[in-house]
Image (cartoon, rainbow, N blue to C red; front, top):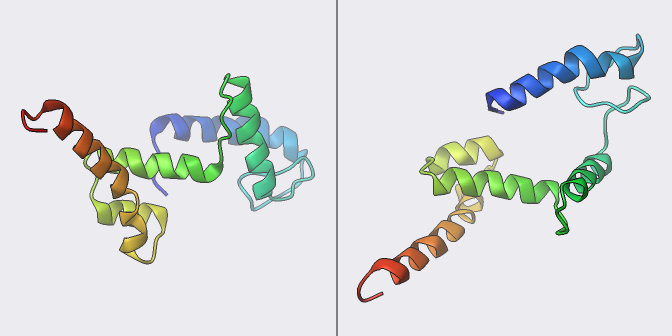
Length: 119
């Protein structure tokens, strides 16, 4: 999974500073772990996202899927190749990825209505 420098730096900081404090000498093959050195559950990921959104003043419910959806939508809106986005999302069928292009189509219609003399 590709990720940017900000994410790379955050993961490196976690691995160097936070993770050793959580592990307390124990071993784990998982990247994100609980205080018991077990893999973090998807429920806990939801909780962390909800807590972070709330602390940021976001009242809307934010889910991991919403973040994934935003990721794909932003890539496509900025010209990313549909096949590349399909691979990044792990979709077996490109038709699943094409769902994200609908938002881009809506944006195009809005631009057309706003700026075309006969829009």
